[in-house]
Length: 77
Image 1 (tube, rainbow, N blue to C red):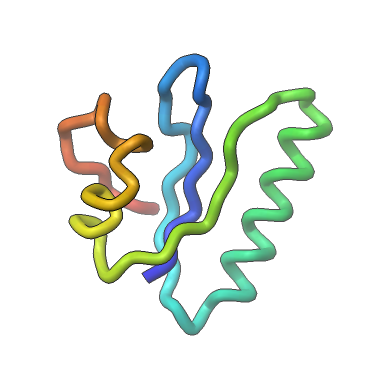
Image 2 (image 1 turned 90 degrees about the vertical axis):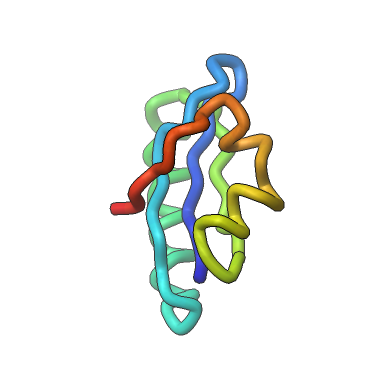
């Protein structure tokens, strides 16, 4: 699975969380670039990344800096 994450580091807030199939890598990349361009136009400096993990549990385990303040389970769009 691929996950598009937008994180506001100063606020320690997860802003965007979307899930993609591995086979949709180009779709995920396009979504990331579109989001980055939108945030640049808004002069908003968020961390925007695509991460790969087997599932949501693995994502939260290995990339816990995005989820540590959020103990509840998140549901991707």
